Length: 555
Image (cartoon, rainbow, N blue to C red):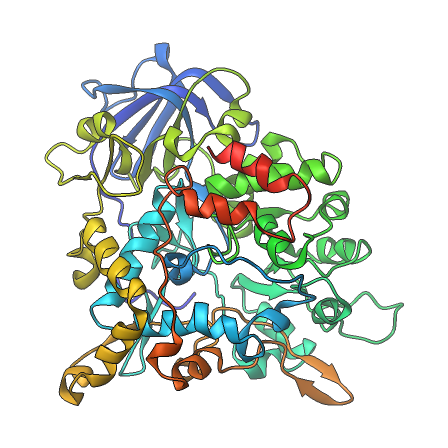
């Protein structure tokens, strides 16, 4: 990682407190303390112990707050396209063979419903901070404490990640949390040898790999082979490669991925919605591939990891009961931490780890099933870096004395409060409340033609006053920043672009603002979003009974 030029996004600071409940440690032994206490100070866990064991040094006078539930490490997701999470679930019209067929200019609806609206929002100086505030809070209230995919760039050409409340795997400025990359320069992916040289630089790379269900999708994986000689087991795969989706892999491919140290991010709901199938998870498990979960985006996925855990359970059951509930919780805690080389700091509850945790109501029954069965309305506390960020009003009042809590936000379960105040926040985003962000986005999406037209009619001096921060959107070329990198295919000695054709957003906007539809801001939580659940019930590519079973788990 390059030398840090800024202090850590989440410095080791914060109040001293303790939380009591059933502690599901997710440590190497998978210890569960039926009645335990987690002691926290300065953003770090000082001790995890049974309630009767007594406090550690320095906590003799710390008030122990009863949570009334089960305490888990914060949920870590390794794949999302967070800016898009203001958009509602897409009613997918057909079963696609691979990513190229539904994204970009080949699908006019993609520009009209996805990248066109996002370009309007992302290039508006008032709306961009609202997007960042809203989608990060949405991750938070669905139990996610670490995610991936909030990116900004400026009119001066600089690109930086938002220093937000939810941890971002690409931007930590913290040696204990080495940053992962999600983009490579085209020249580095021109052939497998150069790609391997990139991997050997020592930084984890999150790469969309074999996304789809046809042979074209699998060819992106086969492009990693260094030799045409089948007797040689030489691949551009190391422990630094984290493949996203991998739906095009055959059973014989997973041993290759595992043997060379590669791992995988699984997004079952998004895979099923777009392709009618997900990765061969039974083969991945047999091969010993380490898996993490990612909710992808709300255009074709879950609202957050709490929902994706449920989709993963259903997909596992459909594949023959591949994973236990404990396995699935591993995929949202321990496994992603190990895959990022963060296991010394995150992914489990133990002394010396960073104080990221969540609490869900209930402390009876199986400890792991309790989390997967939990609705978003059962999430009672989220703590990141030792700061209580979301939870019931009672717990938030106890754990944020003197803090400025935001309550009554539409889309949140009753009696919940958020705490988005952060010393290291971008000043523009940091000054924006969640309610104000939701109001701005609701109005802008409902009148996208008017929003686009007003931006076009703004005087040049207003548009150029800067710096202007904008979202670096997937597949929008001028930024030089792509959030969905892929290896190109090599056919007949020439490089064939592996991603979608650029131009979906431009094509929609070229027809004029009137070409953009009125859209609904996607709700923060599934229990409060009947439209999301209704759309889910009408999705054509989900297996029979899947949508009904998922809705039952969500509500």
